[in-house]
Length: 300
Image 1 (tube, rainbow, N blue to C red):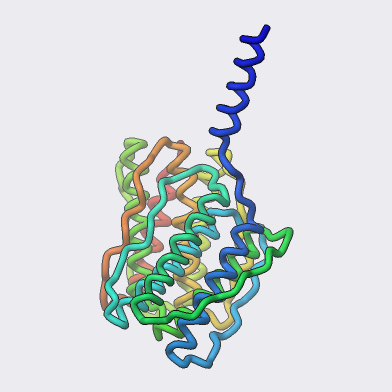
Image 2 (tube, one colour):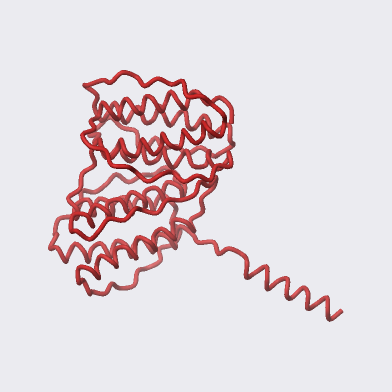
């Protein structure tokens, strides 16, 4: 009897010690508030008194994969800042494809972002100490996204960075590489032909084209029994800027990851290469090509 009890106790200890801690969006949000405070210290150091324009609050039910992608975009802006001040560029962390991404990964990403900003503070001699942040209950992934989105805008101000067609094109090439891996996995031959360039293409046209590509991706998500996410909050025809297109292109990368995971693909989306002198017509053409490639996938 005593041996049986001892076995049960040991089993409970092993089970509890190996169980993954589940981090909630509320906990992630608290860490993002720390990132906001750290960002404010950097702004004060450079006597930046202006604030970024308020960004549109998103209300749709985003998933942690979208939050993670926004964190990736924030890290890209921090890299731009490092380059501006000759602090050395680093490549943002890339994640293995997963069908369902937990908030644990978005929390881990906040820790990397905090570490990166603190390294910058050390290099710049910013020794101020930030205070504790409150834990605000009942936060959702979209709340974390909205706060990260505003912080990203503040780093745009710090780095004097603007999104252009070349940066968006680079992200589209990452998505195209993901599709190449999927085609290889499915033994598909790429017969898609890039559409002709439309020289008079605008950001409005390109943004609409991202939703055409999203429609194809969501068609594949249905096949893979992946829960669809309504991204209609990002669809607009008013005051559309290249940043709107860039954001949606990054979301397309996030949306293709569960499909890769469903297919058993563990290949990372490659880091972005550098492209120069790209314009909206180049972005529109590549989006059209990607849409056609996606349409060729009829079975997973």
